[in-house]
Length: 279
Image (cartoon, rainbow, N blue to C red; front, side, top):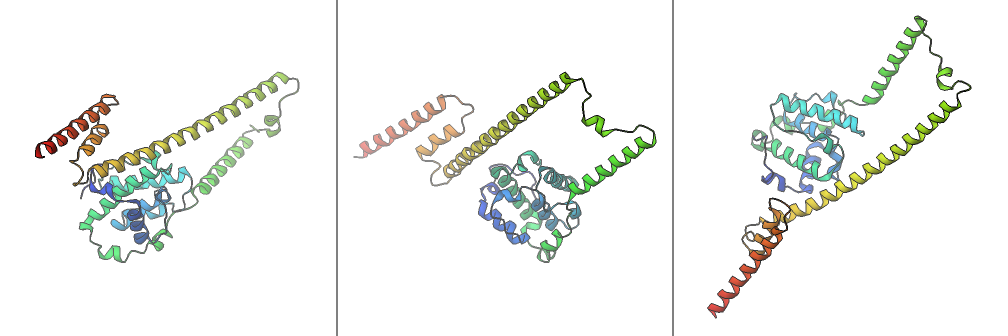
């Protein structure tokens, strides 16, 4: 039962459709995209199905929409991994962003791991597992509970301040004193600067997201080419070998392309020579 699965393992050749079918059939869901499993709830429930009683389902938020709630789910999952001594680092920051490639790779690993437990045989517990009923026991509305606690805490502090004579006058806090026009102007300037910086940060985040999606898109294309080059019938062809020389180049040197072209040219000349000699 391997928790460490290399990137060249056959587990990572499993396609999106197979992963989605596996999730939907096991957990009685209707996911149509890999990104829909980014909340971490699916992963927690898969481990709950695999290891009875290990996952604290009441802590899993199956309706998680915010990154905060998703991160809490992954904390639960990491605790389960630690408890089971599964050496697998979870790239939480990447997963909660809903990046298709990162989520696909993690689910590919998870499927391989779950299938390896008990040799992939569906035991009695898995066959009788009721995913819908288990999800009904999950935790919800963490934010609202947290905000209620915060509100109560603030109310308690205000009561304490009132009792000690330190009364806070909200009107004085919200209105500047008369005769301090410069302070008002300064506050307005700071507010404008904050808004400008916030807008700039938002634009930068959008740019980063766009670049990351573009990077993932082209990485997926390269991965498809690599898989194609590994087909036994093709891996020894001159063109395939030339492509591999570029894919596996140690750095971004231009010589990688030159080396591939040189190899391909030599291979073609060799074939032509052999054909002429046979003729």
